[in-house]
Structure formats: C-alpha cells, structure tokens
Image (cartoon, rainbow, N blue to C red):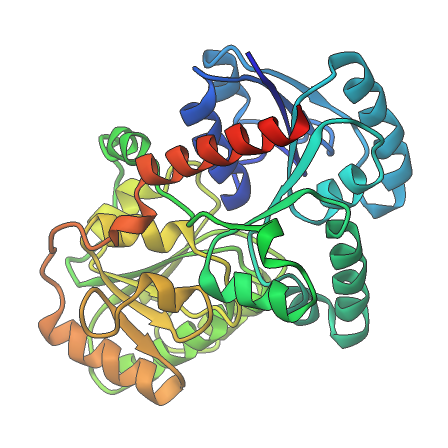
Length: 368
C-alpha cells in the first residue's frame, strides 16, 4: 500500500484543514496516510485530532510555529521523511509548501493550492510584504512535481506566472456530503429572539473577507425599514473593528457575532440568505455548503466564486455595494424559500476523490 504524508499548518478546523480531512476520508482505504502539523497543538475542541484517531491516522506536531522556525521545521520534517520513506508528500498553504520545497526525498511532492496566492498576500499584508511572500511561495512551488489547483482561474494564474500546464492538475474543491448530512442533525438555538429572516456569513474576520461591506450595507437597509437579522460566524483580527461598526449604529440588536464554531451547518440551515463579500477567494467551502443546502447565495463577483455561481441561476453575483444592497432587498422579498441542492456537479465529493486517486496513481508510476 502506497504511503502519503500530508503536511498542514495546523490541525485546527479552518477551511484548508477541513478540506484535507475530507480528502483523507476518501483515500484512507487505499493509502497509508500520515499527517504532520507544522504548528504545535494549540487547539482544544476545534481540531481534527479526534477525526484522525477514528480513522486510525497517525499524526505528529513539529512544534515550529511561525515563519521564524521554518528551518527548524524543515529539519524535523526531514527526519520524519527519512524514517517513513513516503511515496507522495502533499502539502497545504505557504509554510508547509516552503518547508517541503527544501526537503530531500525521492517522494513526489504535490501542493494543494487553496487561493490566488500573491493576490491574497497583498490584501492581507500590504503590497511590499505580499509581493515578497508571493515571490518566495512561487519559487518554492517550482520545486514541486505537481500543483493541484481548484479552479480554471487558478490554473490560468499559474500559467501566466510561467508554470507549465503539464505540472498543473485541475481538481475542483469538493464537499463531503456525508459529513455535512451528519452535521446537519445537530440542534442549535437561534441567538435572536425574533422570527425575522436571517442573513448569515461564515468567514474568518480578516480584511480580505471584507465583512465591513456586509455590515454597512445591512445598516443602510435596516435604516430604510427592511427587517432582518445578520449572523456572523467566525473569528479573526478584524473582529473589534467590525463590532465597533455595529455598536455605532442603532441596530446592534439585529447583529450577532457567534465567533468560531466547529459545526456551523445547523446555523446555516436555520438561516435564509448566505452572503459572502470577500475581495479574494479560492473556492469557498462555506459557499459550497450553502449551495448544497439550497440557500439563496449572494456572492462577490471575483475569481473562484464565478465557477460556483451561475449568476441568476443558482445564486447572485455582485460587483459593488449598490448591487449588493439591491440584491439583498430583492431577496428579502422573493428569495427566502429553501430550494433543492444548487451545487454544481463538478464540485461533488466522489468526483474529486476519484480525480485525486487517478493523479496519485499516475504520479506513482512516474516515481517508479
């Protein structure tokens, strides 16, 4: 049985780690899988550790938090690679990619790309540092055998940045439908004391996610007499600024910050409209979940989102605040009915798993 080592920044249940866990579930019967976290074990309940234990997957923490410890992490990972002799190393995100790029091994190196790397870094860290991160990330990725990209836009981005098409594998981000169905059974209490329609966003509270646009637009609509609630699920560095926006309005009782929750699905089921205002995205797992559950989705018109949303068919794309405000107002009147599954076929779980298996089979043949 071929061996795969999966390198993650942490085991906390953020979107890329959840994606890795979904992939592991689909591969565990066919491959021996070992998971490595670059960070130490900082989580309490918001972790995939129990999921890995149930799957009998071994995992290890390198305890090398932050970029300053990247060479120490490289040395620790090199020991693991030398002892385990894997066939494939699969890494997720910047630090794992940098570390794996420095490893000496006969194993095939694959990176699972989760976003438009340089664009995201510039938004999150500013132009100078963002371009620097993007430069070093792309330099590291040149040392990989394959890059898995989640969208046509991502593939074009890498081709435009002098990567060869044959080294890029398009496998759409996918949804673990069985896991979603299981999580749907949990009962949660609404944080609101009324029966008004609820808008929901599930997101890290960072500038790239542009949550302030949703809050300011909602305040304007509330001031015009529209009646609804806004539930914000997630945590992050921008939380205090966002809370201040609400506290400075007359409508703070219409908003609720729930923080990070390990299972947001029941709250999504109970909501009426899913909103995503990101400036930059890969292929959003929360959006896929909302589409699968038949929710009305109002989404920023950016790369990645356009591959999930066919405007006016399974959701709505907006390009500015006026469009967002108009669409929300219309959907508060006409879009509250739950529909059937709206997720496009290419994002289904079995298709993604089969494509990964085919890729790993072919790349293993190349190794031989």
